[in-house]
Image (cartoon, rainbow, N blue to C red; front, side, top):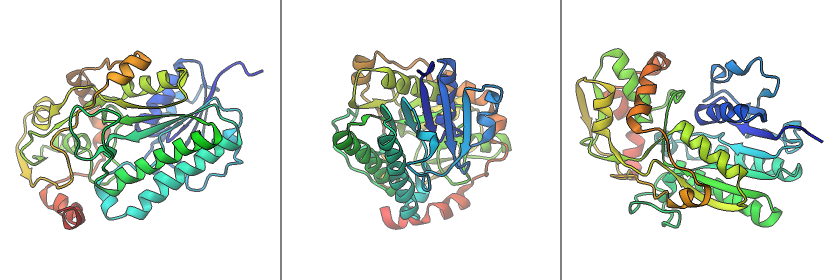
Length: 331
């Protein structure tokens, strides 16, 4: 009889996944990590090197077999692996669908063949598209770009495996995740990676639109706490929104990061003016609520700003080039 609960964290060397590993380690789990190290970084988990209860393997979910020993005797799978950059998905939709849907399918098959108890899926609030706010779990699904579609299809696969194969499944639709370790893969994307490198370089912040658009930013450790509570809960098939339940303007974020010149870019079609999660369900079902205030979370990131020293530096011209396909098709 095993003495510890065993969890697999896919994408466990990445941003949210590595924080999930930290939490599970504190909870005395045996943790198995897989990551292809394209978006993940070994130094996110190197502080666990002396922990014999944590094992890492470099594996790509596009190639993993259902018979891989990594799936043996698991209690939980926390599935964070996938491609997360939004803008490039318009140019490379097949790549996103292959990884975020078929890669998810491979992990689900590993869970099914090895009788994993529960599957925790990292879904995206982008499935709602340009939604009414606050956005609840029963809001209309309306993906605006291939990334959003790929994450939603992955979620549907997971719930089909729940229906047919009785794999307990909880999907957590994450709003705007931020926090330490949210490093860039090199693609143009999330505002934090762009702004922090611009601050380090003393270059102007590139703000899309007028900066009055608002986002529901949720700190990474709060996200992991939601996943943990969902895993340990009695629920066998649920969807939960995870956000702070508050919307912050991009202009406010820039003021927190620090004074600098600003260059304004054209608004991008297909992007909402506001994202704001209705988090009543997860508060009621799991007794979860966010703990990290936005201003404190930004301070934590600024304290680790050197993590972005090797990130690409974006300016108006390079962003115009990176978003050319987006404007071509989503106008």
